[in-house]
Length: 184
Image (cartoon, rainbow, N blue to C red; front, side, top):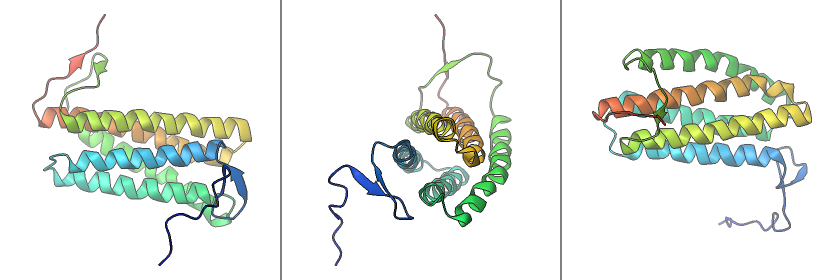
């Protein structure tokens, strides 16, 4: 049986799928780690007393897409990965359809709201904040390393954070939790 530890990263280096070694301080590992954190938090949203099978199915679909996204980013020098990145343009439209479908069930938002309410809603809010961190790291990667091929992924992550926001609001509405309006 293979052991879980390899000891190959003990000196602060690791490799991506194509084998090239990098220091773990490289931005790509921040992106991959933040995607993992986001995916884990999404897991919390559908395990926490959720009875909405449609939302659970959507969350699991998103988790699969994030896992695939991590694989694509880890193999981005391969030609197949570049064609996979282009698929995210279509996924942006799909996210927008989900956002519109859920948003029309919600009251019109006229103010900023405090991330609060039902535990599932709060998990969605935390996932949204992590998603925004992924987005910032992706923008940094594009800007600092001229990785313009990643722009479709930035769009996808941006729209995903919007979806997570409406899912948080929808969770509060479904559990009859009142949204707390931000005010000074």
